[in-house]
Amino acid sequence: MTDINEKDKSTLSSTTSEEDTPLQAQEWTSLKYQLTLLAETLETMRLADYIAFLSRPGRLLWLNFLVGLVRGLGTALGAGLLAGVAYFLLKRIVVLNLPVIGGFVAELSKYVISHR
Image (cartoon, rainbow, N blue to C red; front, side, top):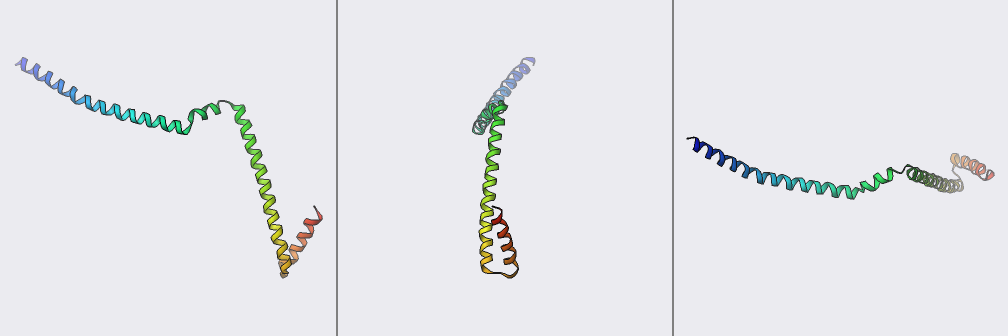
């Protein structure tokens, strides 16, 4: 009877290992797919370039300075353009001779012209 038990155990262990093998292969395939997907995602994010960029603080400071300079210049030009359009519209309102607004705009226009 011990011979039968040992035979059953060996059959059971071989069956178990055969069942584990496809499951392990499936897990490895899934893991390989996820790893490939992660590598592709990191490549599209250009994470290595970003880390290299952060490792050079001098370049980071210089680039941030230039970006701030351009933003300031853009803000100044945009505000000047907006003020010019507003001044043009206010001058048109003066021409329409509206009772309350016309006098205020005329005073404002005189102030702007005298301080050029």
